[in-house]
Image 1 (cartoon, rainbow, N blue to C red):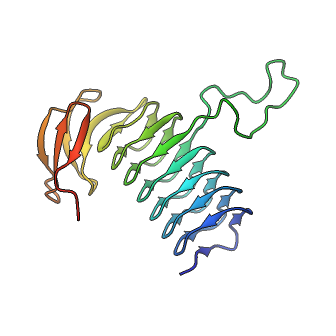
Image 2 (cartoon, one colour):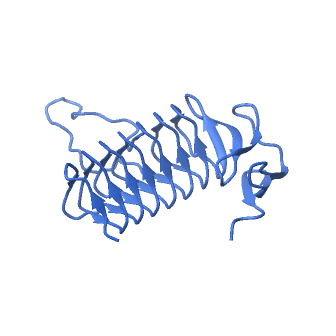
Length: 209
């Protein structure tokens, strides 16, 4: 199955798009070096910069901004209006204001990695030089300034841990924002998948086959 690309979308040279992917109206995907995997959905008016890597079965809703140096792994959901960043201290011009700084990557460019299965809520801003963990969930309108561990729910400005979420998306443990989850074994009430919570990590005890 070939990719479906809306006639108003602009796909530049050097972009690789996997089979079954749908790219909707007024999307702009820059090249070269950008890869979008198979069976993805790229929502209307989304912008994807050159050099971005997007895995398989990824959903980017409308008005998502994905800048250079962002990598999105398989099965990630990025809700509408999310903005990625790649420079902690950006400037438009040189210090003397006489020359415009180039937009191409340089020593100030920092990467962002969104691991498989994660969800980023609508209207979120994602900082750079960090990672969003496997099956983690970023609450809507959050500002992510540090890495998010696997299976963690983070919310707020700046985003702080407030719970743990199952592969299915349902929280299986809640705790005070910024606190650490209590160690132990937990089961998701929605799907019965089980997890071991240990200091510094969460492990699947019954991952899907």
